[in-house]
Length: 257
Image (cartoon, rainbow, N blue to C red; front, top):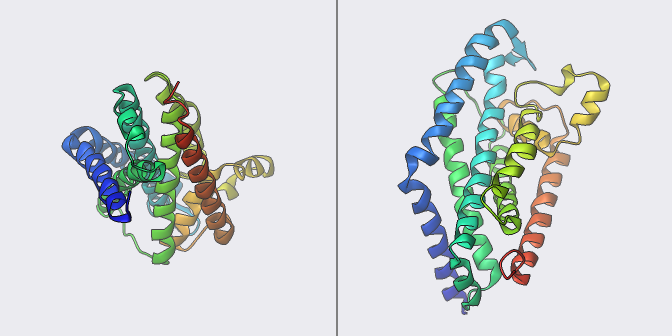
């Protein structure tokens, strides 16, 4: 395929993915907004008034970056894993695989579609947070970079999950038993400086901790971890996941039996 044909194929997949979740927006965009609003009310207003300040900020302002990242992570991942597995289940992926489309075009099409949903959901949550607290932007370029890299990373993660999944139950295992615990223990609701030395060291092994804190640094200017190291680690994960997903797709893993 020529470069122009590859670009058209890529845009076609992305457009289909975006239209898919926009068509059912009450199921894809509204529930995350309602859930996060409940977090704002319960953790921010009710519990936050008792906690007071954390990291030098009002508790509500402190948890907002973590809640935004949580929505980006969950929706980027969920969009790709459900969409690509459905494509496998319906056997329409086989038509893509035998077409002249290169594997990287297929991969990027699904991944960018997941990124759009994750970033759009994060934007909705950000707008909702303005009703509960003031939100500032200390380092805009870091904020944008972390959101894009995180959405990209978890879209790739959803793609990998969908490749190996053999039934619909398999696409719920990783979010339930890995993604959700890591997210809640990733510093969304607290600073790891409050933890004992042992648990602080354990928390440092959680990759989501670096994403949440890097984003919090971009918004509030504070972080529990080194931001440069965090960005390099996230970029490294993205590169590794991309190469692995592309290699597995090229081989037809989980598709060709």
